Amino acid sequence: MNPELPPKVITRHRDGRIHAYVAGAGAFGTLQPAATFQPRSGDEVVASVVRQDLEQVVYTTLNGVVCLTRAGALMWASDFVPHSDVRHGHRPGCALSLDGRTVWVYRPDAMAGRGGGDQWVVYDADRGVVVARRELETVGHGAFHHLHPVDGSVYLDIGEGQDGSVILRGTGGADSEPEFKTYPWQDRCLIDLAPSGRQFMTVDHGQADVAFHEHPTGDVLFALPVEAFGYDPQGSFVEWGGGYLTEDTAIVVTLGGESHDGEEWFRYHLVDVYTGTLGGELTVEASTPYELVPLGDGSWLTGAPGRDPIRWSSAPQPSAPPHPAVPIAPYDARTGSPRPPMERQQARTDR
Image (tube, rainbow, N blue to C red; front, side):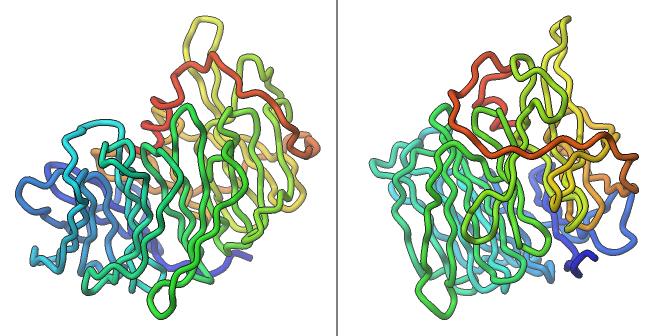
C-alpha cells in the first residue's frame, strides 16, 4: 500500500514568470497554474521552489538566491560573492526543507569562476540568515535536491560533467547544526527517492546500469545492467531519468539507444523494487527521455519545460519474463553515446 503523500508543487518558468502547479487528488490532464510569481526586474531565474501553501517562492539566479511573497514583496535576498560574469556551465539550485523552515542552495562556484570550490548553503527560510555552509570538493555544473519524505534529510546530486557525479546528504538545519555526509561514489547519479524514503535509485554515470540503495546507508539492494532489459550494452544504455512510479510495486526506468538509421529511441520499463524483476513497458508519449517525471503515487507528468505540465495515470502493463538482479562490478565508462554527457545532463536539468 502506498504511503499518503502530500500534493506535489511543481514549478515551470514561462514568459518571465514562475508558475506553480499542484498535483493533488483528481488533478489530471493539463494542469493549470495554482499560483504565479513575478521575479524581480532583471532576474533570470535558473531554478525555483514554491512553499506548500503557495504564498512564497524561492529562486536562484546565476548570482544569488531570492525569496518573494506571492504579492511580489521581497522577503530576503542573498548575493553570491564575488559576482560572476560567466554565463554558461553553472546552474545554482535550491530546495525547501520538508518543514519549510530552511532553504538549501547549491552554489557551483568553481565553474562560475569565483576563485573557490563549490558550496552547499543552508538559509533560514523566513529571514535569509545563513544557518550552515558546507565547502565542497566538487567542480559541478549543477545539482538536484531530493527531500526525504519522513526524516526531512536532503540529498544532493552534483553533476560534474565528464568527471562524474557526487551524492551528499544533509540532516538537521532549523533547530540544530546541519550534518553532512558524502557517499563513497563518484560514478552514480541520484535519480529519485522512494515515496516512503526507504530506498533510492541511482544510475551509473557511464550509463551501464541502474541500482537501488537502502536509505540512509547507501547499501546496494540490487542492480540491473543494460543486458537485464534485453539490450546489447554496446548500442544501448540506461538513461539518467525515470524514478519511482509507486512505493512498492514498480519503478520507471528510462532506457535509450541509437537505431541502425541513427535515430535515438527510448523506452520506459517497470521494475519490481522488492524482487528486482522486470515488469512490462509503460507506454508514454514523450519527446525526450527526461520529459516523464514520476510522482510516486502511480501518476506522472509530461510536457515541455516551457508549457503547462500534463498529469497521467495508468495501471501497470502485463508482466514480462523476469531477469535476475546482479551486483555492481567495476567497469570502464563507455563512450560513443548518441549525445555528449553534458548535453544529456542539460536535458535532464531542463525537464
